[in-house]
Structure formats: C-alpha cells, structure tokens
Image 1 (cartoon, helix red, strand yellow):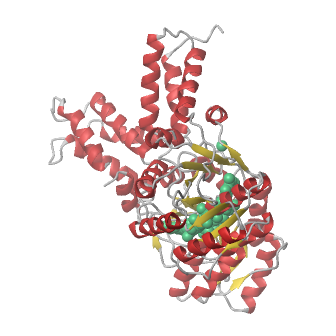
Image 2 (cartoon, protein in one colour; image 1 turned 135 degrees about the vertical axis):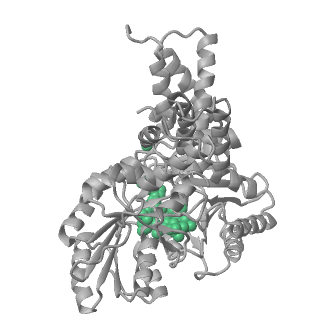
Image 3 (spheres, each protein chain N blue to C red; image 1 turned 90 degrees about the vertical axis):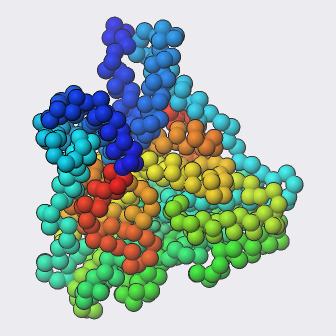
Length: 298
Length: 277
Ligand SMILES: Nc1nc2c(ncn2[C@@H]2O[C@H](COP(=O)(O)OP(=O)(O)OP(=O)(O)O)[C@@H](O)[C@H]2O)c(=O)[nH]1
Ligand SMILES: Nc1nc2c(ncn2[C@@H]2O[C@H](COP(=O)(O)OP(=O)(O)OP(=O)(O)O)[C@@H](O)[C@H]2O)c(=O)[nH]1
Ligand SMILES: [K+]
Ligand SMILES: [Mg+2]
Ligand SMILES: [Mg+2]
C-alpha cells in the first residue's frame, strides 16, 4: 500500500512543472490519493477529510527543492501528522496507577473485542512489574465468561474474584474491593461484558460500575479490524464512562488499524497498549510511529 | 419532487453513504462510476431514479440463492465454521443448531476450539440451553481428534447434522490455516462429500480487513458461505459487497443479537435498505 500510495503520488507529481513550491492544485490531487489510502486503512471518512485538510496547510508552499521528491515530501508530511495525531510524544500513553491503592482498571468495549484476554494480559504485565493485580469477573452474560477469566487467572497464577451466576455486575465489582484489600492486591482489573454502544440498559450498567468504583483507568478495548463505526462506538463509550485510554487488539494480523486514528482524533483518548496475539504475554506498549507506518502500509 | 434533480452533490452523498457503510473506497467508486454511466445511458434525470438504480445494483451483487446445503449421499451433513477471533462463531453455531433442531434436524456440535480459555465450556453451556449434544475433549487436545470423535458420535447417535466449532484464527497465521486444512481432510475421510458448508463468520463492525479475511480463508480451504454477525449494532457490514463480488460466495445468515433466536436468513433487499438508514 505504501508502495502504491507512493507510486500514485509520484504519478501525480510527474506531470508537475517541478518548480520549487507545491501549488494548491498539485497538493489537492495528491491529497485525494492520501484520503483514499486512509480509507483503505479504515480511517473514518470524516476523520480522513479533516486530517487531509491539516496536511494540506502544511504541504502548500512547502519547499520541495530539498533532497526529497515531491511525493516523498508529501508522504513525510502525512507521516509526521499521523504520528502527531496518534499521540506523538505527549507521554499520555502510559498506564496511570498513581492513585491510592488499590488502583482500579476497568475494561469496556463491544462484544468479542478482546476484553477478557486483555484483562489477563494486563494482569500478567503488571505482575512482571512487581504489582499484585486482582482480576474481577464482571461479565455475567456471555456463556462461560467467568470460567474464561478463571482459566486465564489460573494459568498466570493470579487470583480472580467471581461470584455465583445471577449476581449483579455492579455488586461484584464493589465486593471485589474488599476482597482485594483482604488479599493485599494493589491493582484491580474489571472485566466487563461486551456490549453495544447503543444498548442503553447495558451502557447504564458500565456507567454504574464507573460511578461506584471510580476507576483510575477506563480503557476501551477496540479491535484493530474495526471499520467506519469505530468513531461512533468510541464516542458513545467515551460519553458514557469517560475513557482514559484505549487498547488496540488483534494487531498481529494484517489489519491496518486506521480505526485507532479515528478514535484518537474524535475522542482524544490516548492509545495505551496493543494486543498482538492470543497468549497472555502478547501485549505491547503503544508506539505512534509504528502505527502511523502501518496505516500508511510502510 | 421539485428538488429531485440529479446534482453533483447527490453523487457525492451517495459515494459518502457507501464509504460510511464500509463498502470500501474501491467498490464504492466502482459502483458510483458504473451508476454514472447507467444514468447517462438511461437518461436518468432525478435523484430518486439514481437512488433506486443504486439499490438495484447493490442488491444484485448479493442476490444469490443461499439455502444451506445438506448431503444427498451421506447420512451426515457437516458444517465447518471458521473465522477470525471473536467474530461470533460459537454463538452463531448455537443459533444455527437451534434453528435446525426446530426444523426437525438432529444436530450434534463438535467443540474443536480446544485452544481458547473456556471455549469448550462456552459451547457446552449453549448445548445444554438448546438441548443439543456437544462432543468435546479436554482443553488443548488435538482438534482433529475432536472432529473424528464427533463424526463417530454423530453417526452413532443418528444425528443428521454435525456443526464444528473451530478456534478463532487470524487469516495471516499459516500454521493455523494448516490446522484447518487438516480438519477438512478428517471430515472428508469419513464424510466424502463434506464438509457441506464451509462458513466464515465476519463481524459487521469489521472494515476493509473483511475482504482479506474472506479471500485468505477461501484460498486456503474454500468457502461456501458467509455469516455476518452483530448487525444489531450501528455498523452496516458494507464489506459484504466486495466479498460477494470477489468470491462469489453467498451471505447465508445475519446475526442480530446475543440470544439463541437472533439469527435470520440473509435477505439482500433489507440489507441494502439498512445501508442508507
Ligand atoms: N490474534 C489475536 N487474538 C486476540 C487478541 N486479543 C484477543 N484475542 C482473541 O479474540 C477473541 C475474543 O477475545 P475475548 O477476550 O474473549 O473478547 P471479549 O471482548 O472479552 O469478548 P466478550 O466478553 O464476548 O465481549 C479470543 O479468541 C481471543 O483469544 C489479540 O491481540 N490477537
Ligand atoms: N450483539 C451481538 N453480539 C454477538 C452476536 N454474535 C455473537 N455476539 C457476541 O460476540 C461475542 C463473541 O462471540 P463468540 O461466539 O464467542 O465468538 P467466536 O468467534 O466464537 O470467538 P472465538 O472463539 O474467541 O474466536 C460474544 O459476546 C457474543 O455474545 C450478534 O449477532 N450480535
Ligand atoms: K446495523
Ligand atoms: Mg469477555
Ligand atoms: Mg468460539
């Protein structure tokens, strides 16, 4: 794709008089290609449009007499801008556990996005950093959801707080606090059920959990393969529970991950981790430059 | 009707509604170009004419007969259900089993996802709920052995349909694709005309990656149909057009929720209509 975007841009600039500065017309033609490339990477239509507007300002009049070709010049502006939007070096992409212990991390998201797996991965990650996490099974809907978390906890030798079928997810989370104190666990990870952003009853549930538990981190777990709706989903979750971050899962495939750009630009929520496999150690810190390259297919 | 003139803005709007529904830039631009040509040839003058024509084009892309294929030679029909992680395979299998049971079939399920934590338990819970036997082994056992067992058990019990639940796998993982090929071979060994359906389950929320998924699964073991899940969300599943056009594989079912009754046969017209709402 980078190949093809780069080729397409070169094609456009071939017909260019090539005298020093890029004109608005040259830039428009180039940015049309950039926008298509972004959409192929699943960046939301409106986000792509706004993004390209910003690139345009920087590109018009940019001096192309340097060592780079006009195509490379535009690509490099696009890349820089992508890294910037994705979080650049603002340092916000770290987990914040600076509250009074136990610090609570709450995971929310659509069905099947990877919450339960990510809960286990985070617990594993934190254990390696010398923390003492507790996993909490707050999904009482999906068949065997509790067992799934218990199995992962057992594999990792990390305790899982769970209650009987029929228990209320909000109560479970509240009770887990006492349990964590008893067991001297200093981080609590809440695995909530998958839910649609338009399911009012289910959204109320996470709002209640958030209100009662006051988690330090509320992370949206989002599938890297998500398409145009990522924006609406993230926006709805953000409105309901004020997200503090995002985990982008299933990045071990060939999804381009444009959804992350959409989510980041619409909600401003920083991306904190990437899931890169099914195993409990397949979690990586987030690097904006890597995702930028990937979105551009580099 | 005064304002129903065909304007450039309308063309832009149409393109945007396709893009916003995840139809993808290539397919969307191709469709709009084609439609512009038709509009000229057929001398369309109004926006509604063009909108109607677009719906026709879209519907015809999806309009393939899509009933499930049952075996004519063998006493057992086998459906193999595959797809990337978390797309909704296990849930869709439970829904299909429920539907088929109500139609009078005797269904058995094979828990061949032995990898994911509690995947076997998940299918067993569904099996109990819908009163369908689930053949399983212990976690991390060989999925091939589970499929073998399940075929024997289904035949012994006199089941006429076996549905195999497989572990979620990204299409980029070669070793996991090889594993699927093995399952396919085991099925063919005992049910020579099987599997009668090779169904890929794709989450409606997916973007352009859906086409890569479908292509790769098709290239590796073939596909006979698609199930699109989670259409009860706000996503439209517009990748379906590229998938259907590229692979010529019909969409068979739509998942409309998390409950066992939330599976409906695919209906091109209403799917297309939903793109624009
Ligand atoms: N390849 C890959 N698979 C992942 C990753 N994260 C999660 N998965 C898989 O995705 C599937 C769904 O993961 P879960 O953790 O069950 O997702 P969930 O969000 O808890 O699902 P619900 O509770 O049903 O909403 C499982 O097969 C996981 O193994 C990842 O980073 N890469
Ligand atoms: N809203 C909605 N949720 C669905 C639908 N189909 C499945 N789900 C949910 O999606 C999540 C994942 O479903 P599974 O059936 O476990 O998916 P899977 O493909 O078997 O997952 P893996 O085996 O981990 O790859 C669960 O929370 C399901 O309840 C649907 O049509 N609508
Ligand atoms: K929908
Ligand atoms: Mg879960
Ligand atoms: Mg499954």
